[in-house]
Every structure is written in structure tokens, then in C-alpha cells.
Image 1 (cartoon, rainbow, N blue to C red):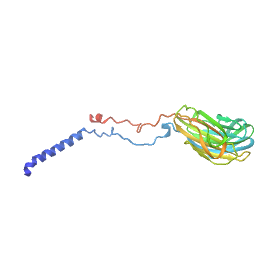
Image 2 (image 1 turned 120 degrees about the horizontal axis):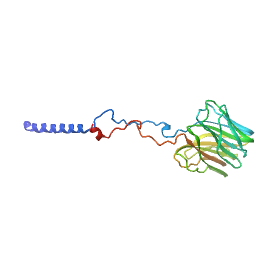
Image 3 (image 1 turned 180 degrees about the horizontal axis):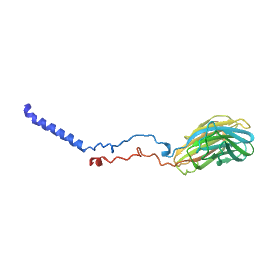
Image 4 (image 1 turned 180 degrees about the vertical axis):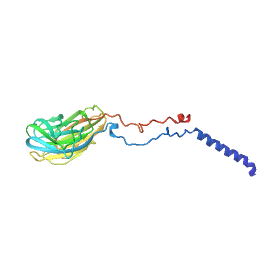
Length: 285
């Protein structure tokens, strides 16, 4: 009986071997030149334009003086941007802003002037490598608060959009209102909010913003300044929103500034390597 079943067993084994051989031949050959090597990697920010980053900040004030000054805590970097946010008790004009050492040129980018003044100035593509003192010069004596902020990765002609609002009715919710649509997808919003009241308190960021600096002065005025920033990757306008722990009257200002590259979204994985042919092409090799 075992001898009668032997031919059938041999035939079955032969069939299995034929199937395995056919399947093996139909598979694409593993040529290392064409073998796909899909691997995940981190993309440097410059590959898709999100290069802007906060570097450092500092604050200063003046008490009925013609100048106000602040000094960074470490060396600035050549090519970066320095912002100067100025809030005044009155509406005395800013005649100029300068730094030393450095010799960079500052220009007003946006601002609002009501009973008080709130401005954002900047120097782009700076000469760095030093720890500069930045001086705000007023056309006459003024009581003020200033903040100086260094950012990396911004364009040399960065300013794009702005919006502002003065809320004379006391509130705990502070907003600049929404800017117009942006000129490019990758930009940085700088928001500034000034407590015009004498009520102290704390600020809370909202709407995806991150804190830059909170500063205050009791030298000639009891006021507070809050700055925050938001890096975006879309052209939708934004508003600078924050809360205050007490009900205050507030001036709010926001400006948007272009990153150094508009970017083109995330590059595909292994975009620097040649894609392998499809399996059916490999099978014919």
C-alpha cells in the first residue's frame, strides 16, 4: 500500500517545488542599485521656509527724558533682525533709533497713536557680533517703555501687514483685530499690548502665540507691556490676542514679517535620491 502511494507523493512534492520556483522567478531581483530605501529624516527648516526664530529680548524705560535705552544680554548675529517696540505715556514722536556698537539703521514699520503711542521699529540684515545698547530718541522729553527683540531668519524687506485697536472700555480680553491676507505663507507675527491703566496683573497668551517678554515700569507711569509672536505657514490674516488678569484699558498692535524663504512645503522623503523603478520593470531586468 505504501508502494502504491509513493508515485502520488512524488508527484505532489514535484508540484510544490514547481510552484515555489515560479513564485521566486516572478519576484523582482534585489539589485542594490534599485532597491528602495525609504527612510524618515528630519527636514532642516530652510527646506520649507520656516526659518524664523526668536533669539533674545530685553527691556528698558525712561522717566520724562529725551531718550530710552535697553541692552541685549549676549552678542547679536549678523544678518538677523532687531525689533524695537516703544510705548509712550503721551504722544511724543520718535525722532530716531540707533544702536552702539553696531551702527544699524532702524525704520518704523507700524504703529498706533491715540492718547499714547505704540510703535514697532526694526533694523534688518544687521551687523552683529557685539552686545549693542539700543537707544530710542524722542523729539522732546517723554515717559516710555521699550523692548528690544532679536529674530533670525527674516527677509531683508520683511514687513507685510498690520492691525491695531485701542480698547478704551476696560476689559480682560485684548486683541489687535485681524490683519489682511499675507503676501506669502511663511511669516512671523509680532504682537504688542500695553496696559494703559494703573491696575497691575498678569498676561496670558492665546491663539497659538508664544511669549516674548513682559515688562513694566513705575518710573513716571505705572504701565505694563506684553509682547508675543506667532510663526505661520499660511497666508491667512491673524490677530494678536491675550488676556489680562484684571480689567484694563489697552492698546494692541500686531505686525507680520516675512521669513527669508517662502518655502514650498515639505519635500518628499528621500527626495535627493533617485526613485526605484516599479517592480514590473525590475522583473524584466
